[in-house]
Amino acid sequence: MREKADKIIIEGEIKVKDILRARGLKMYQLAELMGITPESLTRALQRNPQYSTLKSIADALGVSVRDLFVEGGEPIKSIVRGTVEVQGKVRHIDNLEDIYRLAAEVEKAYEEAKIPLPTRR
Image 1 (cartoon, one colour):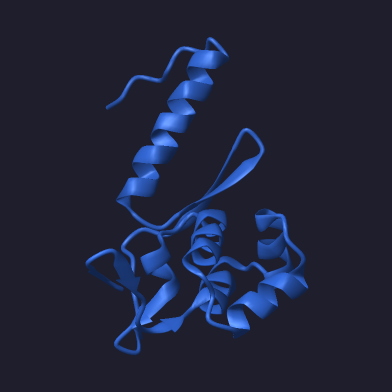
Image 2 (cartoon, rainbow, N blue to C red):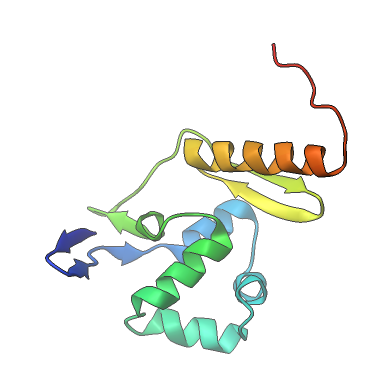
């Protein structure tokens, strides 16, 4: 993906199914997370999806739009990958930014519940 003036040019193959497979998820589950029907998701992926659709998919998967693409035929690799449940919500971790975001969310949950934060080592 590269930026050109006021446009974003998307290059590469969409790898949503690879991401879902790696997480043990199905297309219908992604559609549920997005609040759309599985048929709508399938149609969007079979065509040339708009950026807003790609952003919705990325948000539901907890990744960036850039992470939805294979660059140069090779999947983008991540050092960190995992799934964590916080207060009944599943969070996907694919990069350091996700870890920081999760840590902030957990700290906020502790504060709201008035539970002392554990000491850091």
